[in-house]
Image 1 (cartoon, helix red, strand yellow):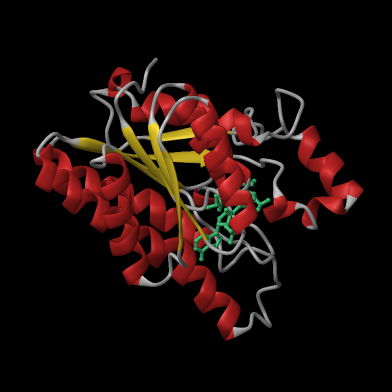
Image 2 (tube, rainbow, N blue to C red):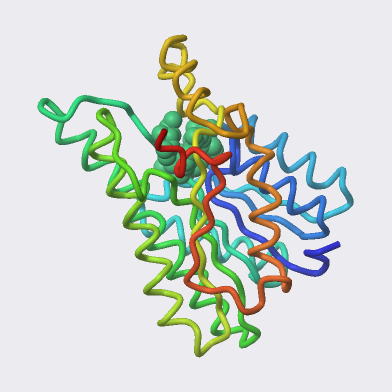
Length: 253
Ligand SMILES: NC(=O)C1=CN([C@@H]2O[C@H](COP(=O)(O)OP(=O)(O)OC[C@H]3O[C@@H](n4cnc5c(N)ncnc54)[C@H](OP(=O)(O)O)[C@@H]3O)[C@@H](O)[C@H]2O)C=CC1
Ligand SMILES: C[C@H](O)[C@@H]1OC(=O)[C@H](O)[C@@H]1O
């Protein structure tokens, strides 16, 4: 049980990667608090799965773009679990859109949810960890898109590069408190976020053809790398970026 006794918080965990990671952490022994935006049924069923594993679980609704959400999420999690040892900042959106006519609202909302929201969460969790005085681990769900672009993701890829940069800077700022900060860089993982985009069979086949391991990712593929970075096995790992992409990034030709 790599996460026995750890209290793990995951944002955006009613569905997709966040949900798989939250349940996966519980399977590895953690008590888990989840944040979510709108999908109450999804969040409640994730908590039910966490509890069925014999762990504590709690779901807290809140838009991560609002700084108050971070304060209330940490407060409820501390109340329910007794403290915070690990934060997985995962909530994110990717409304695919062309660059030349990008609506200001789409650009600003993507920035606020993906980057500002993560900043507030990381700051609130770090302050709690510093108060506890026992160190901790913070993991940001960045992306392969921190390293490469996307024609319909000009508003999105900068947020993912920003998260990678945030983990590098907070690794420095928080190292003295024993708090490790790392970024996970998933490749293409099959979830709601890209369901419409990958409904284009030509695009899907092309994306699959770029992956040396021969398939697109599943949310469960993110569990092992998250558990590793959250666990004491990674006690000397901070400021790092871990690609989890089936080899897509290195496959030029
Ligand atoms: N899927 C992929 O290929 C990749 C995904 N990522 C990143 O992984 C993360 C998770 O993505 P994925 O699981 O695919 O997406 P999903 O759309 O499947 O899930 C997104 C989750 O984030 C929550 N969420 C969205 N907006 C907010 C908000 N404003 N406040 C709180 N929660 C919110 C959703 O909750 P609700 O529905 O309840 O509102 C949901 O639980 C994102 O940051 C994404 O950028 C990175 C690389 C690749
Ligand atoms: C949503 C996209 O399919 C997905 O998001 C990312 O961050 C990946 O790079 C993919 O483009």
